[in-house]
Image 1 (tube, rainbow, N blue to C red):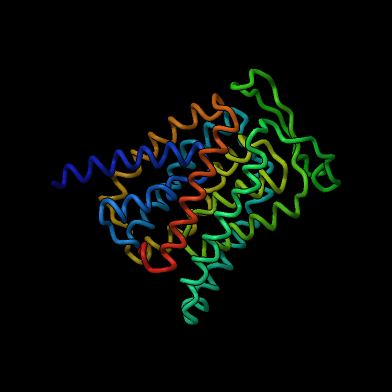
Image 2 (cartoon, rainbow, N blue to C red):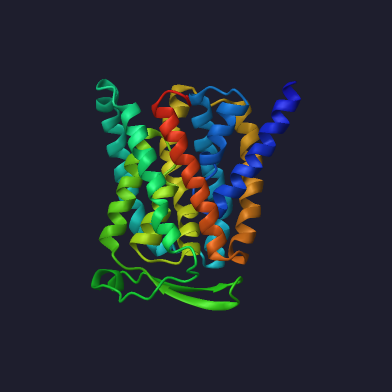
Length: 284
């Protein structure tokens, strides 16, 4: 029985790592509901394992994306400060929110927001490369530009990021939500870069995969300190997630952006539904 559970957990981890690297959301978005709903793992231990798995996803796929030129380190570093600040703010607000018993309401609100956030994705679903927007002054000075060879389109794509302040705001909110509600910040990070900064979807996804490990490492430290990281669960999920994310990073550039958007949209809706159910006390 135990061996069967460990095998199922390993397979689930591979799937989580694969989807996490292809969407830039990290493995936790998929792994947490699988651990809780299908394997009966208590929520705190599931979240702890998911955070560790997100670090594994970032270490595996992020490094490959960086090497291939899909992840833009300059943009990642410029935005990571806002995400970290948001995560710290979320940690401080957690006490106030818990005292006022507002977690259920926030889960429902953010779940609805995530579901409605897929609407702009539908509007850009057929777009492989974003429409050109004149770069603003600050984005030009920070050199948010680059190029990569798109294996699906068989051509080199040049791009530049715009609206850096909008990107900072999106990253701050991503960190805030992650620290406050314990969900992966990858969803809002991808949206901030894709819709806010007008970056190609593959660049947004790859850069998010590179960034999420930092946020997850900060949050997972708390779970280690509280003793709610199960070494057996983590010992099985990390190899599976690492294998799945490595596989996903090999194929991201081979897929059309619209296919990746469809996958991202599906996972985003699932995450939104998961939050709403959690808010009503049905999930967790």
